[in-house]
Structure formats: C-alpha cells, structure tokens
Length: 356
Image (cartoon, rainbow, N blue to C red):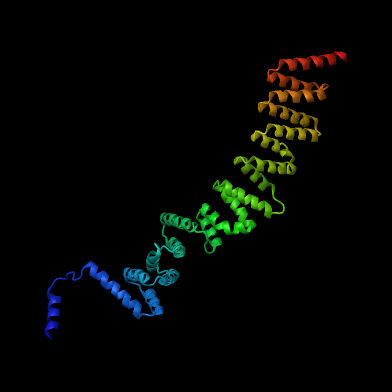
C-alpha cells in the first residue's frame, strides 16, 4: 500500500470526525456543482432527475433556486414538476418546489404558484385525520383563495367560484363571478344578488339587480322589491321613486309608495300630488277620503301649515253632507290649534242642519 493511501486510512480510522469545510465553502461548492449539473444534463434528463429525487429534498430545492438565477425560464420546469408531484402525491417535494417560487415577483408565476398551493392543501385536507386539522387547513385555503381573488384575470373563474362558495368565502366568490356578470349571464347575476345581500354589499347587489332587470323579459316582483328597498336604504330617492311607480302598477296594495318616497325625500308638494292623484282615481269613498287626509297631513308634517289649511278648506265643501268626514276636518283644525276654522266649519254645519 502506498504511503498516501496508508495515511488516509490511518487518519480516517484513528482521528475523530471534524468539520473540514466551512459553511461558506459548502455553499460555494454546491453552487459550482449545480452549474456543472445544469451544463452537463439536458433539460429532459434534469426534469427526470428532479422527479426521481425522494431523499434529499433540501438539496433539490437549493439547486432549483440556483437554476432560476442562471435561467429564469426554468420556472416552467419547476411548475410542471410540482404539478406532476401533486398528482403522484409526493407531497413533501411538491411543497419544496412551491416554496422555491413563492416569493417570485412575476405576477403570472405567483398566480400559478397559488393555484398549486391551493391544490396542495386540498390534498392535505383529504388526508387530515381529525376535524381540528381540517379546520386549520380550511383557514389556510381561505387565505390562498383571497390572494387568488386579487388578480384581475384568472384561469377557470367558474371553478374558483365554486371553491370559494364551498369555503364560505363570499367576497372572493363575487370577484370570481365578475366575468360572467359582465357577460350578463342570468344565473351569475342571480347568484351575485344573493351573495351581495349576504355580505351587505349594497352597491354590488344594486348593480346586479339593475343588470338582471335588463336580462329578464319579465322582471319578477321579488327583484323589483329588492331593488326598491336598496334604493331607499342608499337614499337614492330618484331611482326609488321610479321603481315605486312600477310597484304601484304591479301591486295595488303598494299604490301609495311613490308618495312615501317623496315624503322621505322631503318633496312634500310632490307627495301631495301623488296622494291627490290616488284620490281622483279611487272609487271607494272611504279610501278616497283617506288619501285626501294623507295629502293634508303631509303638508302639515312638512311645515306647510297654511297650505294644509288651504287644501282642507278646498275639499271640505264636497263633504258638507257627510258628518263623519266633516268631523275629520274639524279634528284636523283642532290638531293644529286653528280654532277659527274649526268653529267656522262647525257653525256652517249647524246652519245646514237647522235649515233642513
């Protein structure tokens, strides 16, 4: 045996193991090794090597990171490898590859990584042994889907909508519905209305209801009522009044809604016009009088006392032979402390009675 071989044998047999290289030297050697590996191996062979790696995941992740520094296009290789690994359920290495690209500044790459990470945690959830672990994974899935929802354009929005709904991520679900909302798809618009209502997103609900009203030939009463309520809630009285007029045609019990909208908008004179129109259209005597006094009270409550008195005096002439209605006029004058008009009307009725 040669002298050098004896020396090596003696050293390895008798001396304790020592750290021969520093961490810096190991890192430097690793980088050199990776560069040589990249130059020697064709891309197809390198891909096979990555997929066959089942032991040293850390080293695999290191040389893939360095490959990115050499040629950024290798991200496609990493993404493709991670997809195959997830299908083969080689979870540890798949997650290593996902983490290699997780901090990429390229938005398209970042998006693809999020897709993969979501699939990774879905598989993990299937393998979860208890409810507590599943809840923890669902939380992670919700975080990822919220990140995906931030992108303006995504692949398979319908699929992501369904994933968001299953995770009860309604705000994200709305964003995934957006392409179909813009196309005016009826089912998407209906889903939008329900989801927006659940999360109290009034503006989105109004938008989808307005779009739905143009898509549906016969706009159902439930949608008209929903839109009407939202306009009132948002204090959009101009649009609310328009819808109220439609409701009044659909449902006779809602005839006075236009006047109510005008009262809310403090358009008291317009409200009076609405009530007087109903008064003129109404055939039932009791309902007719009711609309008249609503008009009078609207002026009074709106701070237009003199105009209320003027209106009352104008219409009381028609009811001089109706004791019940005359009593209503007298009570109105008394309610505003106008004893003069109350006494004048009472004396007039008395004279009429005495003349009979």
